[in-house]
Image (cartoon, rainbow, N blue to C red):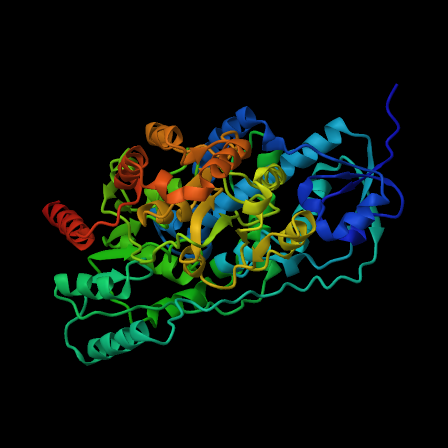
Length: 590
């Protein structure tokens, strides 16, 4: 006998879609926020298990999505060439729109599979469809998309498009008081602060304007210090110039330009949906705004035929830079990327895979990442100098809370974050009360949800809201506890500050070449894979952290790891110059 369908499917945290008193099936943990806990106490609900909590399935889907990306990219590039009457290469489109396409495919697949699992496993009666204007949720460019993809309204719109395409459940149509008008997100690009660096930049750029020398190498967002970037210019007999990008203007959506489907042979219902939704969600800068984008590119005061382009930070979310790079690479310019942050690379990371597929060389922060023929070891880019405070506090550094998945990476994301956060609370709970009172929890700016959770769970713990530089906290701490695989623990180890690392190996997998070096850190108490182990170790060493940290075995393990992944090389400019000259010489001989 068929089960009675009586559950309301809720796809986001928009409470207007939560119905009245029906039993709810939340599509994921992203639907529930801490501020809604009192509402949730009065409702009957279940939450769909996260589809990628099954890590075996996660890795199978990674393989499928990689193959799907390579299948769709040339088809989309060919279509855009036809629309814009251009003849750009696949590499051009990979550099310019590839990161958007990769994120978009992965986002849609995760949302699609969540709905598939919900309609298969639960007796869903209907879902609420709010009135909206579809074109309000079309991104203007990649920077705009990076905000929309984490936004409830945009995700609600995507879920509705999937549900309408699948036609598996009924809609309950209700008028909405929500403002569906898309918020345009603008941030300062490469903003320079007043001070010595600002003075050096202004003087350098003034000399460049007065000079008759035209630079053959183009640098933007390199992650090098201002002084090192000046020195690098001078090594190539260039007048130092600090390049800044510009905003792309908001473009009006033209629905007639989107009345096409992608010419891709679909092998599944999901791929058929992609063929329809990609034209509808393509950022306006890539379609309606392409002509304006080219006008802006032609008006830039950047070199027309650079021999080499080098960036570490401007090639993901800055479309003006990406399209400029793509156009120059199509004409023969060499393209060099620097590792953003530092440390061992992840076992799965689409963004890194994308970078390696687009560049000619990839500058890594240590020799441990040299598993790809494009990767060159140059050392750590950052040169922030600070000393830990032996009489300071403990510092717990949290991962940013991202409720919605958007990028294939072997780290906690979306609903996995609930497990991650519970482990942070478990760690703090197991610290001795006197130690706990002497800890600061560092959150990312704007993490009000987490801030309230911490305050309610541990009122005696100091919460830092992330508005000040983390280096200010580093200089006040006696021990840095790093809980995710990002830049922070590498900076701490490189600075020889007492460091504890812990994360759950189920969700965080690093590249297999780093396993031996993490094992060395584990043997001396730096690395832990449970909050219990980390808390136990801190309770044991707290009264004399320096005795533990400066011991021979700990320092040997730290130095070995730092040399592999995050060493602050004194000769980093020598290494960068040598690699760039070698790349240019090789290209000249071809």
